[in-house]
Image (tube, helix red, strand yellow):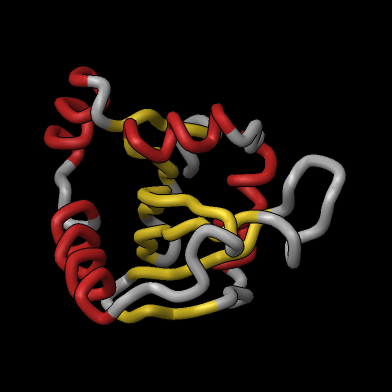
Length: 125
């Protein structure tokens, strides 16, 4: 499985000190069908912990996910900042997931080279 962060999500993760280990654990849980919310269309909401805290007081991350193949961290927020995702936002997230999860290897290389995506965890078999 290959795991990526968008440029915007990378800024959020750096600001909130979310480690690669925390992100990899979130994808592992998704891969094991252990997720917080399936928003449909390959879009999942997953809780991740703050440093020194638990998941309940942590962050919510939005992941575009295709089991065993690709994962993209696209958005993150504190629950105190946003309790629910609107119907319009869900539609937009599903459209984005459809695009990201259909990227070819060549397109992924271009996105990585442009800096719009960053791969984490190294390439998975």
